Image 1: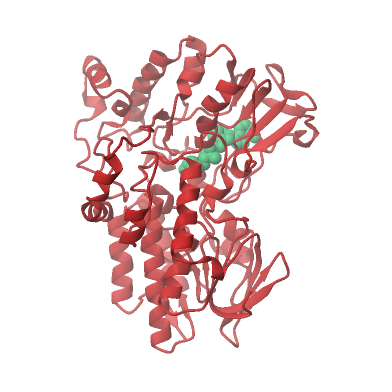
Image 2: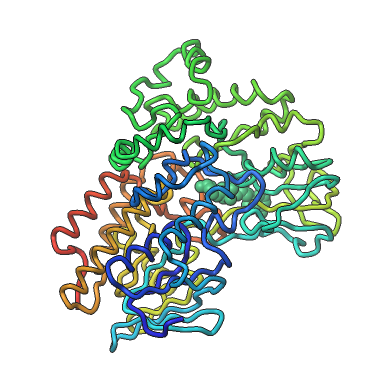
Length: 536
Ligand code: NA7
């Protein structure tokens, strides 16, 4: 590794790959340091069976290179984990990024030297370097959390985690399997495991809202036809609220629905249900803002579940008990159908929780379940988790954990933390990130950061740093936008709020105002000479 570089990029997922390319393109010497042995970030670690993107492949891809978008061939409409990993390796090679990547190495410490204005970057391999700029492309969902369940380490069988699943896969045939966790990861792997296992127990603490994915392989010629429309697709994506135009699915970035569920008689609601099926519960103007309307929409949802799941008790347990829209909506392939199989049993933990894991299985208040394999699909310390796990020392040696502990997880525009000059965060707290098409959000951040760094260098400046005042103002603005929706309702416990991590401050972290408005604000800040930032 070079000892003295212009920039270090931490992480080689979508963000790190593009950031490394972009910084090199504007003439910087760059090292990209990645913990995984390969590139891909989320798509390197989450290799569990059934792992798949819930966005159309063409939309879940970089738009910055016409060559790349024309040359790469997706196999599926909704890409699988191997397909995304193949794509990111293709991009890395196509841009010839490997010479400046250090894989299999984790950044452990970042320290800012106020005299030199440079960062020292230390790693778990003992290699270190210094750089003028650091970009944390560390991912919003990259720090797994282990369930806080007694006896987990006493289990005598195999314990697997979806978010660090063995690269060689796992054969569940002839095994009794337990899955803990029914978020996206659990819901995607359960139908696949159900097809293989002798017996599958699904330990559900909270049911999730999910609906069928449009997953299927591309028809011959279909991808080629889409490739001809890239300019129009990209332009529409950039203008869309969530960075998504839902190719091949219903148009959801069009005008919001006008009718209110509470103003609609029951019979008419059922007609809408028959017509729109899984789209029906959210096809109302009042569902995401009025909890009573949300309850009514949940009744529609419950009816849809009952139409698939044969056992009435299981169907009832599979209906979430919190408002729709509070957590990320899941897309699945045969999830509810899996519960009609004779070898699958839902263990509703609301009827008696897990007491402990024993050497032979899971002991709950409603009985013991003997298993050979335990799969934990128990989620992540989202958005701030990865940054908090690196020891980051900014001005006056203050660690990021001290700063955030005192002030909350401040990051001006989600791009920079006051007190940490020349350190940028891609998809940091307070940016649209996880509420939007991640790739579109990442491209916007990477391009803004690259332009900002180019400006600092052109003007012969040493550092750029978000002011405390601007960061606090931004945090208040982000918070005020999220208020009054089901996302912040008391009955909502989501990872957007940090509610899945014991002890984490309850705060809605992403910016809910949509990508176009956010992009415009970032543009204005740059055009006005970087308002809210100070230079040295
Ligand atoms: P999620 O969505 O955070 O889901 C984690 C699941 O694990 C969720 O059902 C949790 O129940 C459950 N969980 C966590 N700890 C426990 C314990 N101790 N006992 C029982 N159940 C537990 O993570 P995913 O990986 O599925 O998805 C993350 C994101 O990736 C997703 O939103 C997409 O954006 C892609 P809980 O809900 O907390 O009651």
